[in-house]
Amino acid sequence: MKEEIEKHLARAKELHGDVCPGLVLGTRLALVAMKSLGLNPDAHHRDLIVFVEIDRCMTDAVQAVTGCSLGHRNLKYVDYGKFATVLFDGKSRRAVRASPGRRRTEGVVDIVNYYLTAPDDELVRIEDVEVCVGEDDLPGKPQSKVLCDFCGEIIMDKREVYVGGDTICRACADGAYYRLKHRRRRAGVVGIPR
Image (cartoon, rainbow, N blue to C red; front, side, top):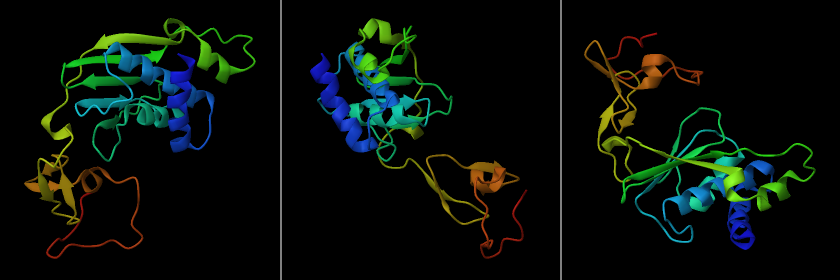
């Protein structure tokens, strides 16, 4: 078992850059979740969709073990700030959520080694869950493409909103996480709502 963990941890390290407790824990979570679904972590699973609940080291490990990525649209980020992942097998329609179990880390000097060697049932909690994955969240070609009436950028996969008859991207509608130094204006557009 430790050899299998170390093999997948090596892939995670290659992606992440170093080995830390979160990377080891993420590797274990992903491996146990895949086993729970009856999936071989060494095989490609076209129908696998993975949700991660944190943007930390664990996510790199889950990506390395499952082979899922944001670019392939089979890795989804849900910002809960938790070391947890949900694996959804589209073929069987089963999903499990893996999160840290009752870890006994008091007095543990080498947490990385503990995460490498602790029994699965002590380290990882697996729960059967249901996941609703809409057509616009599935991997593959975009289901739709529209232009924002304000900034003119393409909006894919039904991420647009409609305000007063206008088709608007979420950045223009709600305010973006960035601020343009010089505001572009699309021809014919009078103003941008705020």
